[in-house]
Picture 1 (cartoon, rainbow, N blue to C red):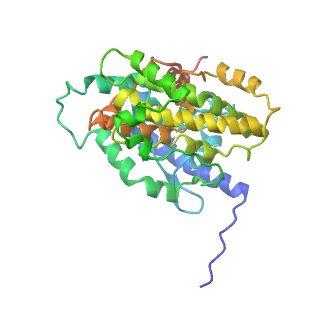
Picture 2 (picture 1 turned 180 degrees about the horizontal axis):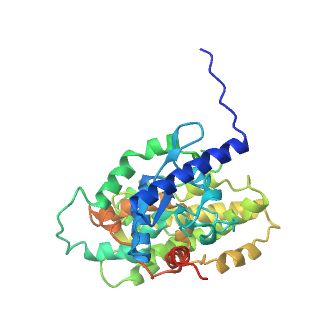
Picture 3 (picture 1 turned 135 degrees about the horizontal axis):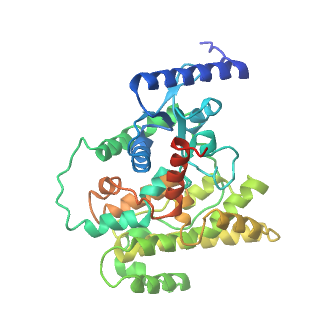
Length: 375
């Protein structure tokens, strides 16, 4: 069977198509009496952006567009599809996207002046994983008697996240490229499922340091998310700086897929013990090994200037978990959380810690600057 070649569209044709679609969104907005139409990456993002916009501008009425037609006629989602409209945005039509590395790479014109909202963290999932939000769920888990509501926004989001992942990846305008690499991490999943005594008995200097810190991090038996995320961040921080640095000077030297694989951590039956010590051990071992590999491979590299730039943009040794890929972080957190409270994920999605940290404050400031621009 002979396949028809994919049609080629000129820039002028693309411009005219997306301009027409944007005009249609704005016309529908006027009929509905809404404040603004907001094109988001996909349906999974809606609960996050609804919470943010409602908190920042409670009197607003927003229509969310979670996907739209591409010029080829397919329903398409993803950040690339959102950005197709960037030349046609105004106070009535915005886009709201995950930052990925756009913020840290200082990609131009991704800002409220151009009617673009961004997460400032890697993705919206990082915000739900903010340590105080996780701690809220953990500390309240034994006292909660709330009846499960399958029609709540959080329950609907859970269902969407479970059932639409494959469809989203298939239809996204920017499917993830699964690059291959030769680097091998030595850990096995058995290490997190091993009996408690076996996991804590390794005479390793790094592990002894983690064990001592874990013992002193809390005086009670509740899981300490602040300790967990600060320790996680200290492990990952040097590699995040290397990843961002090499993206600019030698993109193939540290593939993003390798970094994502590094932070895809095994979670087993005992992973919630001792504030996640077994997970942190695996992460620290991986990070130490790969950092040594980078230093051997690039002995003359000096990324201190890039580290200073990252620090100026809010990336620190104790909070860089907010800037790693949210999908891996979120998956790890909900799997650990499920061992604390079987409704952990649903409860975590109920709230955001507004005004508690800089990245979410920036989003609110962006919303205010759009709805109430300075004269």
